[in-house]
Amino acid sequence: MAELTIDELKGFLLRAVGEDETIDLSGDILDAPLADLGFDSLAVIATTSALEQHFQVKLGDDDASGLETPKDFLDVFNRRLTQAA
Image (cartoon, rainbow, N blue to C red; front, side):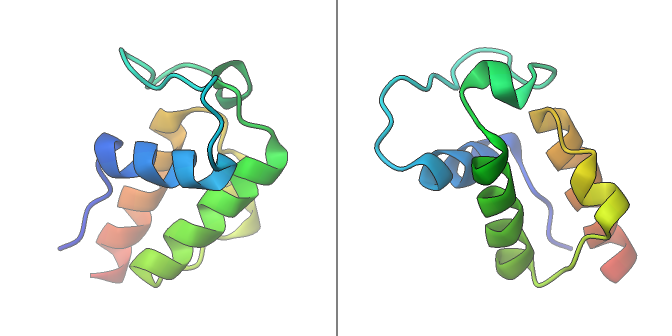
């Protein structure tokens, strides 16, 4: 069964913002608001879309609108991956 890890998520988040060197995802970021980490709504949408394509799952509107922290991404995607298995 596939699972989204924090390290994979960090890679997807960083690819969504390109070469922005001001973004630091080191340390404990699980509960940090994505906006505080430097990610705007477009970066969150791009990350969500890339993860949906990568894992071949589709989030519902309720799940996608609740993605405010890295932990939210992990919880929602891993729950969806478990359901799809």
